[in-house]
Amino acid sequence: MLHDRLADYAAIAADLGVDAVALVPGANFTRCVGQAFMSHERPFVLVVKADGDAAALVPHLEMGSWAQVGFDGPVFDWRDQVGYDAAFAKLTAVLGIASVAVEGQVMRVFVHHAFLKAQPGLKIVDAEREISALRMIKTDADVAALRAAIGISERALERTLATVNVGQTEKEIESVLVQALFAEGAEGLAFSPIVVAGANSAMPHAHAGAYQVQPGDPILFDFGARKDGFAADITRTVFLGDPSDEKRDVYETVLQANLAGLAVTKAGVTAHQIDDVVTGVLEASPFADRIRTKTGHGLGRDVHEAPYIMRGNHMTLPAGTVYTNEPGLYEIGNFGVRIEDDVLITTDGYETLTTFAKDLRILSC
Image 1 (tube, rainbow, N blue to C red):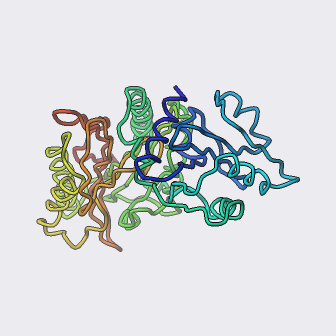
Image 2 (cartoon, rainbow, N blue to C red):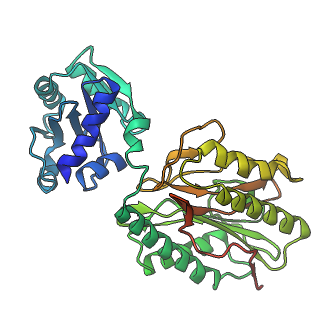
């Protein structure tokens, strides 16, 4: 219920010793109000005080949608023709706060400045970690949505692989993948897909272009469907025709790193421990100089969210956490391999939500 979710943010404010928490449209906002709103040039803010009171600043054109949320606190709407300064002044006056915690990775500078213009001296602190942590433990409904998004993605990949031929461009293959995602029921794309081959696969965040795939090429697919507000994030690397011994060895190394990470995954493990094991496998191989990324990140409403699976992050991961296990090896100018699973941490271990086979796959050419 909305009241219970608002209470979660009131508790964060109390724990941090600030007067309130302010949310803006994004994953945390959606989690709180149960409905997605756009982030655009119009400020839209929900403020929840430590004592449980709440107020909202809402662009006038969103008032009809906001009414469906069921929020019963004060609402200050504003129109483009007038501007939002007066609405911010009314909001801060009603709230009577001296300090507010915000999402440091989400709130934009102009909203920050609008708060300070309305109330000079207002203390604004970054509570990204604490606010986003509420989304780290997934509910049964969250996991069901992730399963749906992942299933769509995997079926779309299988359809796409059946169409790949020598001479196709990366962009042509990407187009088939995107069409397959929507044909399988995606409500949107989790992010712009990465479909790259040959030497382009060595750039972890490259994008499809005019390169025409050739025999022996690795083709790296990093993509995901979005369903019911949640995002899949899957990577598989396949080969068009028989790969070289070097490519086979690199692939096997990445696969063993992926499996090693799964083997240590259970409630109570730290993000550091998972990454240390995964990266340790890569470091012990002949390809250690090709390590370029951490092991992974949390997954949910956002494609990248807490926890971040990397050395130095000693956050303990509870049951219900979903993270990506995505080791990779990349040699610029040569090729790269990445294998990515979406993993649910359980009380006594883990469940790999991705089920697409990870054995080295060779497409006929």
